[in-house]
Image (cartoon, rainbow, N blue to C red; front, side, top):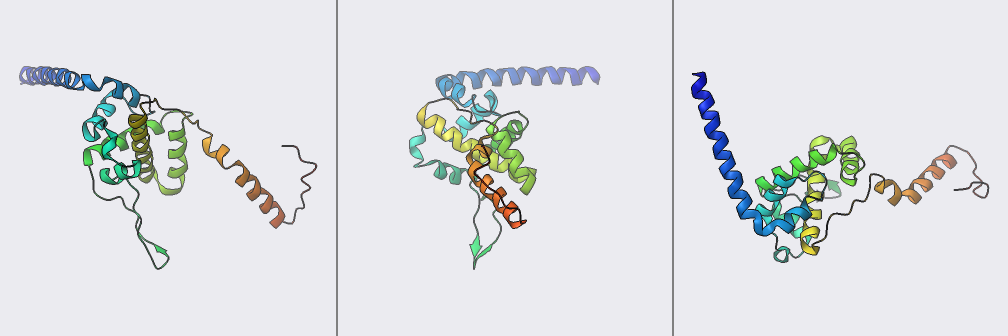
Length: 192
């Protein structure tokens, strides 16, 4: 029985090699797009192949990145009525693309000093790991849209992008907290 199982495994390995060769042959015309998508943190060659297989490389069929996001089912849901926010579930869309993007998001979350990992950690602390993975997957899809449209590689914003972007707001919040606590602050003596 063991020899039969080993033969079966060998047969499956040969089939996998044949399929990998077929995929490589069919993806040869899209080599430039594959290399561009491979620059996104968390997206490897296989994920890039799946993204291209699902959405293609011609982004002119989608008027904007938001349209692509909505078509794929990765757009955040918005259900609000009478000033009450209800469930924000994403709608049903392309399950293969969604699986690939969430897998890429979880991979990107494990990397260090990247914008996507920082985004994942920020959202995960407030909303949980599954919602964070979907949100980062959405970001990866938006990035992929712009990369394929502009034909330019991914530009890393850095892990501290969110802190730099909201530095002034953080300073104002800190000053307001200190003033609310009854501490008077003279900004002329403070050097930034």
